[in-house]
Length: 98
Image (cartoon, rainbow, N blue to C red):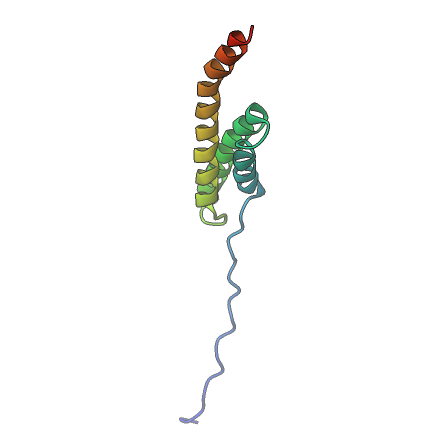
């Protein structure tokens, strides 16, 4: 009886943190904002990024991927700034052709 080996303890299933889809949308929309539909994609990218970061923080570790949401936010804000800076340039180009 002293040499008896005990069976290993049952395996505890570990939950893998999921990635919320809203953060993926944030990154996709932010990248699209540089190629097409600046206003229609940059603003939703920023909104989705903030929603995703909020969900990740409130999840207590059940959700992951804050980096993707942050990348979507940064790219979305850069696209917004570039777009706003480009409006006066576009207006001056239109006026110079008249």
